[in-house]
Length: 252
Ligand SMILES: NC(=O)c1ccc[n+]([C@@H]2O[C@H](COP(=O)([O-])OP(=O)(O)OC[C@H]3O[C@@H](n4cnc5c(N)ncnc54)[C@H](O)[C@@H]3O)[C@@H](O)[C@H]2O)c1
Image (cartoon, rainbow, N blue to C red; front, side, top):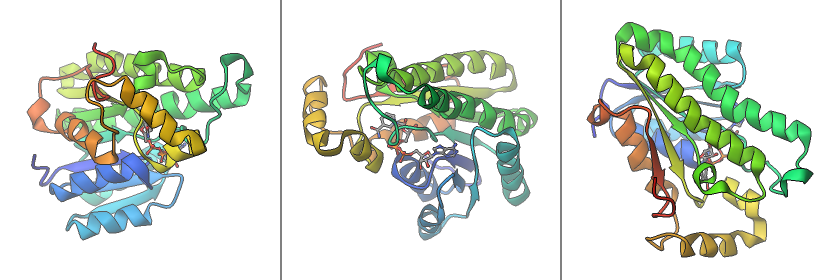
């Protein structure tokens, strides 16, 4: 897949999966804008090592003003926006406990970042995509949404909302040839997964694999293909869909 002259935004790209998406778009020729609440200079260096142009911004995806500034900075630098990967989320910092022990503030924060954050980023980039009459938005959901992850109701509900938002937005934006799809990964070996499961991580990976048709652990590079495909013109008539990258756990 070739992204030469395309402009891609990846949110939450300071580390983990977001950083890998940024690397792989850059490798295929895209100009890549990355943002996060964390410093993205490591990701920016990776983009430049791949021979691509990039910019980074400190962006809070929950803020209309911050996401508008992000989109404007990308337009000022590159003149267009072809792909938005809505990857930023609260995951590693969350408590995974029975539903009636979840903290109310944490519930609100999860919805704020994981759901409202996607809405804000879409509002910020869609005017440019409408004007171009093209664009692809890839929202990162999770297997939690379709499997029904126990002991993480706020995260599970937020990632199910991502699938609903993907479908609704796909209907609204189809007339402008702007596509909206989602990718739902199973447990991936990232720093955030380590933060969630601590010393139980290996056991969780074993149990997760035991439910997969293909019994292999998922690494960051395993998720990239679906994101690249949905971002590319190869999927130009695909919209409103969710691709599960889960080793074959839930069949939709
Ligand atoms: N790792 C997994 O097993 C897994 C599985 C399914 C889905 N996912 C999803 O994939 C994505 C990336 O996961 P990861 O494991 O790389 O996690 P991660 O925590 O490393 O990445 C999320 C990034 O989002 C950023 N972020 C949080 N709040 C933000 C805000 N308000 N504004 C901007 N940035 C913000 C964080 O700083 C972080 O860098 C998340 O959407 C996660 O829910 C991960």
